[in-house]
Picture 1 (cartoon, rainbow, N blue to C red):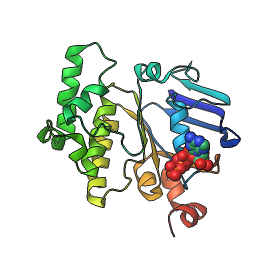
Picture 2 (cartoon, protein in one colour):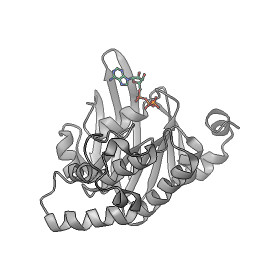
Picture 3 (tube, rainbow, N blue to C red):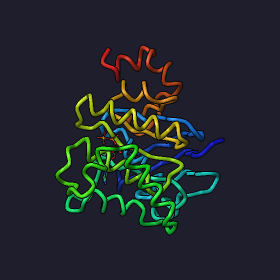
Picture 4 (cartoon, helix red, strand yellow):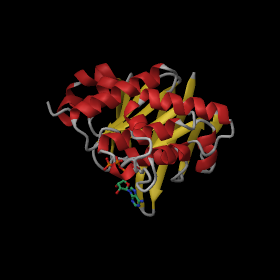
Length: 236
Ligand code: ATP
């Protein structure tokens, strides 16, 4: 089943066109990655899906419903959660309080309690630091907190913007192992990454953006071996 479908989506910032007629599909259960150079439009794609930036033209269907004119808060309630670039946690609030913000749209108290428990099972480091101010966490722990907070709205589709950014390889590995678990327990993932090698090894399928256009797409395994991709994105 198609969970998200972008058709001929264009986005402008004033006179600058950031996305040019892009089309993408994400099926339920998949991990799809979106890669490309700096400024190619990856973040804009995620922000447009989650209602933070408005399209100029095209369609965004989520579970067959047009979400392109809905406010971001409604889109979260529909089960679509965005973990932004640079994590955007609240540094002066505790780990626990940051997580509470993630559950703010929910009224099912028992379900929320269960999901807090699940977050701490997924991220034991956050349990140990429950009362610590979030701004004093390491970069990797802040990324874990941002992901855990994103999961507390119970998304069916999780949008992740550069979860590996600025982190050491070992912590990246730890985070991606947890992301695998999150996907295997039923959450579909759209992953934006500068690290093409990491993204292609992690995802089922991928789209490559270049100057706001989808330049290439396909199975991640095939793209990993594609000569053009290897030269332009994998440093081969
Ligand atoms: P990066 O990997 O550097 O985050 P990206 O692929 O995510 O890059 P975007 O951030 O989506 O790219 O940017 C796409 C284009 O839109 C760039 O040319 C950028 O300068 C422009 N852009 C992004 N945000 C704005 C904004 N708020 N106002 C004006 N132009 C913007």
